[in-house]
Length: 322
Image (tube, rainbow, N blue to C red):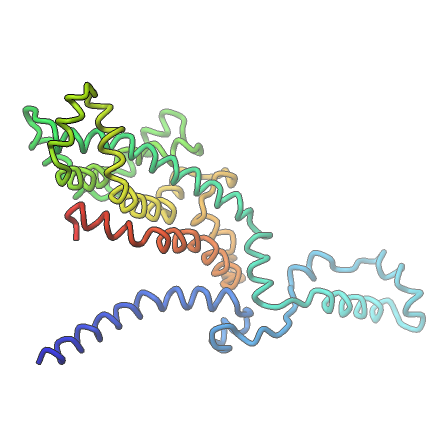
């Protein structure tokens, strides 16, 4: 009976893992295939990697009348139409490229992807830093200081966890517009400087820190803020790493808020907004370069998670959120 239970448990976990992995598999596979293979659903994981014509390369270098006149010596017995056809064929041959190379070079050439990645690092890094500056003293006060109304304040923190971001998006947008901050980095960062989840997570971790450690720091003459930054912060590294994963992933992948406050300045686009560069409306989306862009965008998050995986689980466990 126990073996049957274990079998169904592992089968359920396997199905869940497949549901999570399949979109990533599809994303990486599309980033390696040609448009024809993507449209027909053929080619396996990597596609055949046969040479294909880069139509944008052909369109950008199409020969004109001057090119025909210049090439007339090379084709003495041909008419102008035939010379033009020969030049186009020569051009198409020079624009042959492997699908994987085409997709990934398009991701960097057709859109300033490095600029978008830099914007993503500036925005997510600034948000996380400000959230830590606010969350650590607040969590310390709610866990280690005794003052009137502490439980009420903590109850308000829990209540704020229930408010969805979209419910307050319009008032935030109007406030930022009145301050003239639309289309600035401030519009991307300021609304998220206070994280009630961060306060809650750090408070749960600080509850596990012995009071004797804080009393000893006070006896050494340290003030409350010094205790926060010089005593509590070093002990809270696992919980901070766990919070960093949640915060960075949420804001790195956020499409909703940047789409609202960045309305025209492409130099402020974050990585998810960069995917819109390959949405070609009437001609259909360029799925190959789009999936190559998505792969480049998501890779830093996966690498960061794999590097911090052990500390991340440790932080979640110690904060009592397992």
